[in-house]
Length: 112
Ligand code: HEC
Image (cartoon, rainbow, N blue to C red; front, side):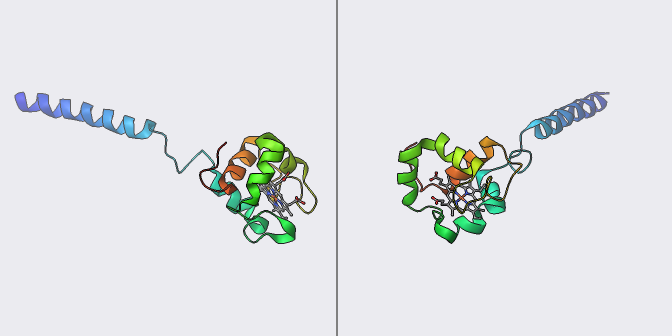
């Protein structure tokens, strides 16, 4: 009888563990990272600097950020700027997607 009791108890424990694992947000799904957006929609130009695009991690970003602020840079992506088409290669991205992609391209340890 004692044995039955403990078996039942441990299966309750197991379902709680399974529930916790299922409810824990996984970083690999649902949330789109700046890196993923960059790879999909910005890399084509910003990896090599095609047509004067500021290269990822380049100090040129500091000047642009200083001049326009993060919101201003987001606006440039949304509306397009010179050789950059509106939205980069992602016309269905949201402003927060662009913001994430821009942050990903800024030099490391930038004061924001
Ligand atoms: C077809 C090429 C191309 C793609 C794709 C592209 N860009 Fe650009 N981007 C450019 C060029 C060229 C410039 C420089 C424009 C200038 O200053 O004349 C630029 C400039 C920028 C700037 C600076 C704007 C400013 O006001 O100084 C930001 C921010 C930016 N890109 C973000 C992005 C993001 C985010 C993506 C992806 C969603 C992206 N770009 C995709 C070509 C591209």
